[in-house]
Length: 123
Image 1 (spheres, helix red, strand yellow):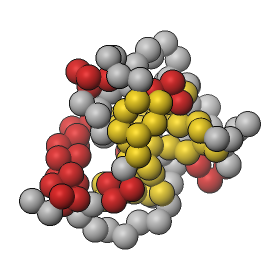
Image 2 (tube, one colour):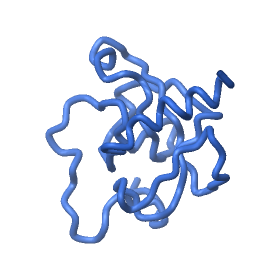
Image 3 (cartoon, helix red, strand yellow):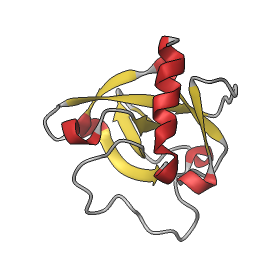
């Protein structure tokens, strides 16, 4: 089932960047499929551990942007077509096999994950 148009991870004509990738990495945005639903998520688990784990921690991505310290704002520069946010207040464990297509990457902004985790734990 294709995702709703409002969540299309690529611009029209843009190639599928998920082809040939074997494992996600911290800071990447992936499409996760679970219980008949498909949504983008930000990978939080450290890259070095992902290959050894069946479940990884992700921050779900939502179109609701609250601009609070426990969110990382995302948009076109990160591979998503709409302005949205990864919510660290709602971290989830998902099976690695549920990640089906790479949508984007935080790139040099990866350190924002540490800031959002610090805000989550209030330390």
